[in-house]
Structures are given as structure tokens and as C-alpha cells.
Length: 471
Image 1 (spheres, rainbow, N blue to C red):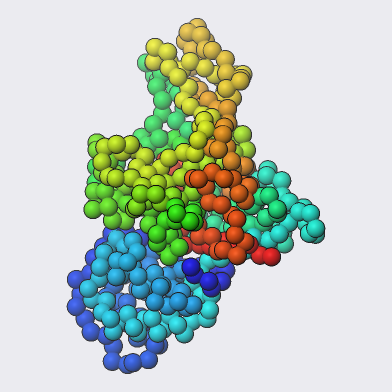
Image 2: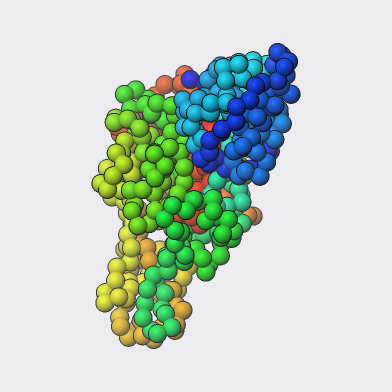
């Protein structure tokens, strides 16, 4: 476990981790000290063919010392366990695999330099502050508004990259009492995406649903190339989905995900078409070959908190799900290792009768692009025939999750070009698919992702973060 503490405050370029390899065979610089000049030269020679300026990677060899120190790639408290050391050795997920040019001498020089950094550099730590009874501030209300407690807690900025959206950081605050963990997450988003695949009346009078993507990516195409070809994620002619938030936690005990505490969510991201290495490519024709999440060993479980604007928010809930082991192949190929805690999802599509939507809400007007199950009204043929071409009808009927799937309370509020989402979950649920916050001395590893009108192309945190309970 990484023990150092630092809040990330330095803004550095946002770029993307992607598969690469290095063929360079070089020798290190002549000096023997751990100066950054020597380290920079090593990194440029060994990694520059894939991580040079403009390469679209999270790590760039052009990053300066301060940027690297705050990147999450270094761990001065345990230099040899820094991602900058482990990734080129392929000891933790690395799209480039083993980098042969990164010799033992080079690693030694980089390790020495990491050890000279201030303790706490590179780690993203969220400190949960006690609230409620016996403290000056009451526990927050889960409504998306700022409560008094949030004004007393400094936010920890976690970098996100790699998918649709303009947010470069997600600010995270946390509090707790004897029963619950509370979290506040804030990120930039110029528009709330509420139009999730509605029914629409076509020019010929027939009805159909608007696809999440108007143009499907070709099999084998990378997310990076698809995003570059569609730079406006808010274009209603190109996308019709919803904003989402994901938080994935390592679990502990027998279900611990090996490597999560070092590399975060990256250990769960695989591209079966690339030998199950990290990567992000599509495969519409053969679902088992598309990139997806799964654990590497049977019995490993990562707890996934999945807030979905159109499907969950009106019920003040997030979907309690998890990631488990999956063997690449056709079985459950669409979801890979993703699964849901016991209970009902509490949402489903507005079904069709003779190719037409079956229900509307109290009126046919949108938004909202959801219909409460207890308010749905059957549409008649006469009503549908009378509606003008281009009319949209909500395609999501919701009632809220049930059972263990409803363990997470969450509410979002979009205002002034940003999302504010408040979350509450019991410290201990007893659910075998959940992280249990039952050891106040432990640092809990997690990663954050945001989905800006994106079905799967999320902006993710490429390094690990931790949450610590402050006495």
C-alpha cells in the first residue's frame, strides 16, 4: 500500500494512455547523479518513440519535473514501486508491454531521482472528515447542493483523460459519520446530456429510436481515432445518450484485485483483440473482441458505483455494480466482467407495439427523457398518428433500483457549466460485491471516470487514488 499523501494541484497537459512499444537501444547519460536532466534524457531515449510530444498519451517525455512529480506515476515513499518503474517492466498494465531499452541502470537512475522528491509527491489522497453528531457540521443532505461540511474540506483534484468531454479534473471531497461515507464530486461539463436514445417520428410517419451513435465505429478502430473524428460530444445529430459518473474501488480480503493499489482501474481495462493488454478499441461485429473491463483472476472483485443521469438521478440513486473475472470469449461478451449487485435495475426501455412506442408520461413532451413507471400512460394509435414528424418520446421507464443494487444514494445538479454529484453509502453493507469501509486505518484505493454524453468512451483517471478516514 502506498502511504504518502499529496493533493494534486498542478495542471498539466491532458493526454491519453495507449498501446505502444519501444525498439530503441540506447545507453544512459554519462553523469551518475539523480538529477532530472539525466532522468529526462533517459525517458526521452527509452520512451520517446511512443510518449513524445503530441503522441496523445497520458505520460509525455516532454513533461517537466514538477509535472511528473504530480502525475501519480511516482511514489517517493517507495520509489521502486512507482508506476514509472513498474509499467516499462510490464509488471502493471502497460500498453507498450516490456520496454527492453529501459535497462537496470536506467531504472536505477530514475529510482534515485524519484527518491529525492518530497514525500507525498505523485499520490492523490482524499481525506474523509468526520461529520454529524459531536462535530461542528451536520452530515450533508444528498441533493446535489453544497452543504456546510463541504466548505470546510479542501478538494482533491484527480486528473481524467482519454474520452469525450472537456473536464481535465474531477474534484473529490469526502466525509463520514458512524454509519455512512459521503462524497462530493465536481467536474466541468458545458451541457447536461439528458436525451438518451428517444423514440422519434420519422418523415415517413414510422417510429424508431435514436441511436447512441449515429455512425458506428469500424471494428478495430480505437477510441482515440473515433473521438478525433467526432470532436463535439454534444452534437445531437451524432450522439444521443446521457452523462454518467463511475467510481471503482478495490475490495479487500479474499476478493482484493491484485495490482489495483498500484495502477488503479487500469488493471481492469483489457482489449481482447490486443492480447488482453490495456487498450480501447471497438468491435461491433464480434462483441467479445471489443475492449471491456474484467478482473484477471477468479475471485477478484472491484466495487463499481455507477451514477446514470437519465436512469438513476430522479430516484436519487446510483447503480451498485461490480467487476469480476471474465474469460475472453462469447459468454456474456457484451459486458465482460461487469455485473450488478442483487436486485432490480429499476429501469428499462419504453417497449414497442407494432414498431411504435407503447407509453408516454403524463404528457408526451420531452424532456424529461424518462417516464416514471407509476405515471406511464398507454399511447393510442390516434395520438401517435396526430403527432408531427420529428416528435420525440422518452425511451426509458424508471422505478429506481431495489435490493443491494440500491445501496448507493446519489444526486446530481448541473449548473454554471459543471456537474456536482453527492453520494452516500453505508460504511459496511455486508454485500460480498462491495468494498467494506470497516478498517479506519486503511487507505482505500479507487479510480474515477466521467461519461460526457458517452455510452462507453469515458474520461478516466489513469493513476490510482486513495481515500483515508481522518480521525
